[in-house]
Every structure is written in C-alpha cells, then in structure tokens.
Length: 257
Image (cartoon, rainbow, N blue to C red; front, side):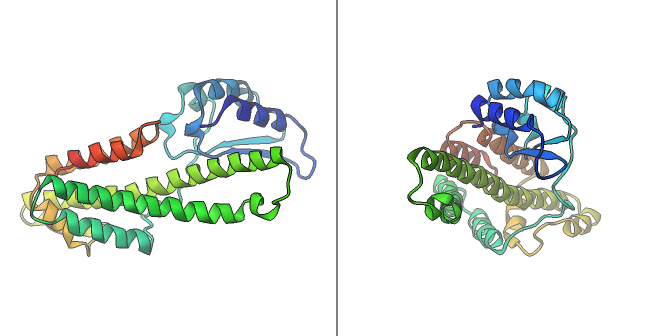
C-alpha cells in the first residue's frame, strides 16, 4: 500500500523548482494502492499543482481510486493499440490450463488441478520478478551502505516486487479472461447454426486452442458469460487485501467448465 508519509514526501518534492529541466514529473505507480488517508492528503496537490509540474497516476483499475481523486485527473490510456499481447510462456501455460479444463470429468479434483496449475505459474512469476529486481537493487551494488539507507532500499525493493507481481498476475488472469471469452463466443456459435459460427471463429483470440471448443460444447452462452464475470470479480478481489489463494480457489470453483 502507498502510505500517507510517502505521499507527503512526493508533495513536498514536487513543490521544489526543477533544477535540471523545465518541468518536474512525479509518477505514482499502482495508484489504486493509495490508502484513503494518503489519497486525501494528495487532493490539494492534485487540485493546485505547482507551476512546471506534471503528476501522473498509473493504475490498471481506475475504479479502485476514490472519486475525489478521479475528479481531479485527466484520464489517458497508456495501453497501446489494444491488441492482445501474449508471451510464449503465457501461451504455453494457457495450453496446459486449457487441456485440463477440457477433460470430460467435472470432478472437484479437476478444479483443484486447475488451481494448482494457476498457483504454480504465479509462484514462478513471483520468483522470476524477485530474482530480477533484487539483482538490480542498489543493495547488491553497495553492501557497505548505511543501515538506514539499506532499510529504505529494502522497503523500495519489496514494494517494487509486489507492484510488478500484481501487474504480471493481472496480465496472466487477463489471458485466462480472453480464453474464457473464446469459450463464450463458441458457445454462442453452437447455439446458432451457421452465420454466428463463422463470425465467432474470426473473433477468437486463440483459434488454435481446441480446449475452449470442448468446454464451449458443454455450456450455454449464459454459463459462459457468467465465467467472464467470475474472472472480473477475481481481479477486483485481488485489488484488495484478500488472501490470494483463497480468492483463486473460490473463483475456480465457481467456473462452469
């Protein structure tokens, strides 16, 4: 979480005149992690920013920001061209998830196998992030630094790891969301004989994934649409202090597969 002390430090720094360039820029990454008291402390700075300053609040879930923050900001989209970008690692994971989900048995054990696949991938993601960011941390370069400075770097490293992990976790769940969208499109094409099937096929994100077709054949469009809502709810839960494993378990048990 972003604390009120951190926000006060940003507000104090942004009031100073720039020394190296014409403008000073403050970027708050993961602004949805602002505590309520921190957000309220930032309102005055947002409403009356000092001259030659730019304040950028980054978030993938604007709904988590309080209304008084949103009303003082101009909303810009930094998401690129909007096309779905999936890494080879994410695609390999999705193929495994899809294969398990498409199995004919609908037992409780099958659901927990899906959960194991997802949690194992998330653990792998966190491990890679931890290793990468730790290697780049000044803690590694300056082992003899003062204790207070090392403590500050450790806090910054922990926050950076958590923020990057949340971003990549959201990306992975986004891939799953697109796969469930394919299931939904194919469930609608199954309900309509000809025209919708062709249209649905052209809109698929992962047309080569046969698992989504197998799942879609077992569902009606209402069930498939409910699956999308389950993943959206999971993303919202994970934006709070909910226990990750519990939220994932509840959500996967709700899925119609």
